[in-house]
Image (cartoon, rainbow, N blue to C red; front, side, top):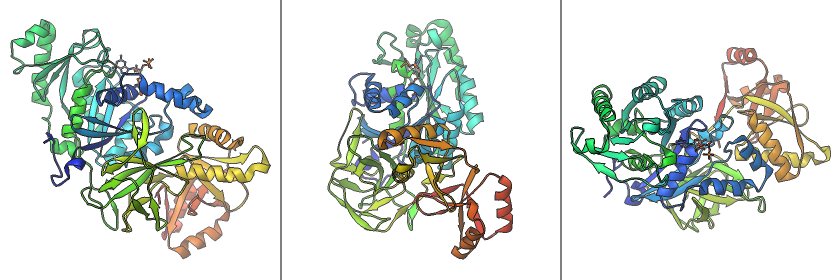
Length: 534
Ligand code: G4P
């Protein structure tokens, strides 16, 4: 029996041992390093460095990936599964750069928890704050790892205060750092009353932990020199007095985050964090859907697509739909109902993403992430079931914040551009709008860098040079309302109207004033900045 803070005691053991989570952080805080150590301790890789090495092999396949490398950002997300101490961890990677936040938001709909990594010297940075707010929208449980304690960092209380004040969440220390920078010795594990000392000689090894009976145990003096020991005792006493104690229920509800201190590069604090994810992290959760929600323990299989990645292997024009299993026990070869098209779909070659490779997924349980190669049938937001017409809800699509016109460099190839843009729209990499009046397309993105990535990918994957240029519009809003009201509105505003790749009506303008005026003059219509993927 696993020592787990159960919130759903009826779950079958195979489901109860799953922990599906993402890491949220600001670039450079140490997400890649921490991921690598997770995989190392999860037995999924043999030595540190393989994640990056694999990344590079993949990148050399195309210049698009080279661009990613040059800029030092990770553009594409993927999923990784590994076992640790009886748990099955499914780690969904999120792109860290803010220009790709939409993809990140959607990824966060597929996880049950998030690990927030902060740099001990920098504290809560902008991208962390943004991602945290998304987690908050869903009350996602958050476990915090304060990294780089082997460097000069901020005072521990200051770090905790900053998280509490900036993110309005209770913080409870799961460990307490002893010294910092050059003097960093390790941590006192407040949950297990143990001393964890850092091994500076071997970055991939964890020195044995030392069990002590509280802070007045004389053995403490054997390992920690006087001044550091006094400081530790004083700080821990203060922390116990001033900071809230760990409340597993509050953690699961997303109101409290336990914080571990460590140094990912030195493998320090990582195992304690992994134990924490196992013990205090949530099991697969109930999934919002229509007309009813889906419980993970339901025997029938359901899953939903939260990400589509095209051209993962340029030699085969395949697309992989990343599916989060929401319930049941999936077995390879099952025939599932593709709810949007009402067509059956035989899932004969699903893949599981292990760190070093993809391999065929013979089975999967609620909580797992599988990849389903397909030729474009599966789109973001799609639901797969064993028959019932369920539709998973809550997967957002955001109104783009930047709009540009897009034309083929070679006018003879305009048709191909059509196809390429539609593919990227379906992948969720951009919004593509076809204006009612005029030719060409208007492409909308959340961050400017996405235009460069798109241009580069269209050229590489479709052999098609494209030009992005300015448009007269700066905002796009989806128009919702009764059919007749929408039609009436469209006929009077043709110059501002376009359709997106699903055929939904979009209003474009450069003036916020226009949007406000429509809200005033057309109470029967709603202009919205998001729409649910369907
Ligand atoms: P990211 O994915 O969040 O962007 O961060 P990443 O893991 O790539 O780490 C960013 C930098 O911080 C890397 O250094 C990495 O080695 C370093 N780092 C990660 N964890 C620790 C830690 O615990 N202590 C210290 N001192 N440094 C840490 P880099 O110089 O940018 O890259 P590299 O040359 O080391 O690969």
